[in-house]
Length: 63
Image 1 (cartoon, rainbow, N blue to C red):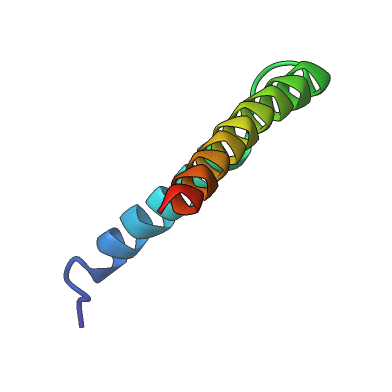
Image 2 (cartoon, helix red, strand yellow):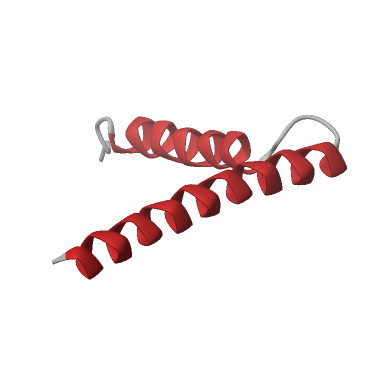
């Protein structure tokens, strides 16, 4: 009545599942600085998107 390697595979799967979740959710550093950095990145992305939209609007107006 042996289970073969099912028990060992289940342990490996559980260890992998619990180990990967911990690494994803934890962020290093000061939360305030991280928030400022994230905000700066989002502002840069928004500026690029606004410029692209303006360029597309200008090109549509010419046609």
